[in-house]
Amino acid sequence: MSEQVLLRRFVAPFRTGAALLALLVALGASAHPAEAQRLVVHADHANGIYQPGEEVHWQVQWEGASPAPATCRYVLKKGGLTVLKEENLALQNGAGSVEARFTEPQSLLLEVKAKTAEGREIRGVGGAIAGWKQIQPSAPRPKDFDAFWKAKIKELQTVPANPQLESADAGKPGVNYWKITLDNIQGAHIQGQLARPASGDKFPALLVVQWAGVYGLSKSWATDRAAEGWLVLNVEAHDLPIDRPEAFYKEQSDGPLRNYPAIGNDSRETSYFLRMYLGDYRAAQYLAERPDWDGRTLVVMGGSQGGQQTLVTAGLHPKITAALAEVPAGCDMLGPDVGRTPGWPMWYWQTNGKDPQKVHEASRYFDAVNFASHIRCPILVGAGLIDETCPPAGVAAAVNQIRAPKELIFFPVGGHQDENRSHAAYTQRCWSDWLPALRQGKPAPVQNQTDPITK
Image 1 (cartoon, rainbow, N blue to C red):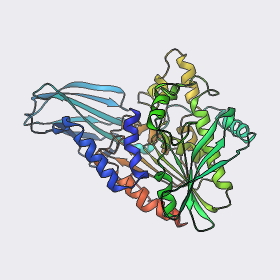
Image 2 (cartoon, helix red, strand yellow):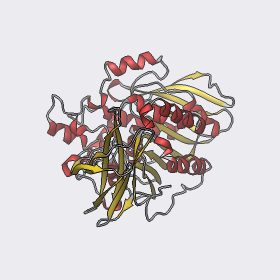
Image 3 (cartoon, one colour):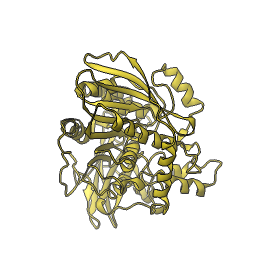
Image 4 (cartoon, rainbow, N blue to C red):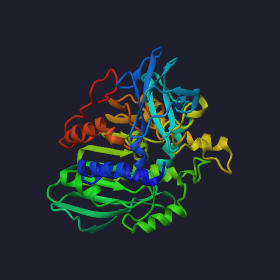
């Protein structure tokens, strides 16, 4: 998944909301003329949820002005990785069907490809999941996992936070805004933006953590939330200034931060994510120590890599009171050992020039699954059944470790990018239900579920 695509997906909610999101969707559609012809794949259960032993029947439909092909090629994969079946599918008037039986708690991914009359390849994807509450991590947590992170937090605490705040124009009436730097381990820093209402003494706090890529922070991502009444800290995933020109971030992405997830990933002591996770812990601690925090509400939220950091921070920091994680990355890193795709950054395969076993072992200490059982606050999670970046089985495995009140929303036809507003159920619950309630000091509005919401 390119950083530019991830950026387009997650910018919208932190800017101006629905209007910009609709614009981005429209722009995305116009930028891809191949979508004039498409393969639409739907499961016979509208929510995509089944039980082990049940059959799933996918309907495949060719749509578009171009004449429908007579056949297409499909691949059925368990966990998005293990090929169960691959063959041609005849289409009658552009329609066909594929059936599969769930033999165990798992997810299935159906990939269908066909060619237009002009020879252009069109791809469609369908997903389904069975027995999601029984899906477990691919490997147990390391025996010294807790001891390792306890020692790292202790190491962090030997470094004074040394907050440095630089006041700046908020660009929004009634809001105060600062650029902020905190000290981290090994001489690194946490850089971000802080905002709060200009009037008042105590506020609920919101920690925002960032998705994948190398980019600056838009001021409105903090000030919009502050205007709603939050004390907001939005932190960079990297030790970089937050407001340089775009060319600066491209230079970093193409240079020292190229494929940053693989930096040091063959040791738990050198992984790039060690500094990132500890930076999130320090950011949460900083909010909890501010005199203008209300002492009751401390929420962490993010999507993709930000969802990964959300699970980790909620599992590490005891003062987090609620968490919201959309399509969280970093789940079930050893998934290929049991035949399923791991979540981004897929360290399992990031082994070029390294000992794969060392990479696999180090990944266990940064796998969001292994932090999940320590989450004690209410949490909202979203997962796409056709998400090939952060696959649903790994997300389910993480959620199933959480013993706190939790709400999992599956997107039946949703991938990683909120295609055609496929994440709408999560957007509604997050922005219209959870965040307003939490801001007002009310309990998290966790819905009791026999199965995930799939509106």
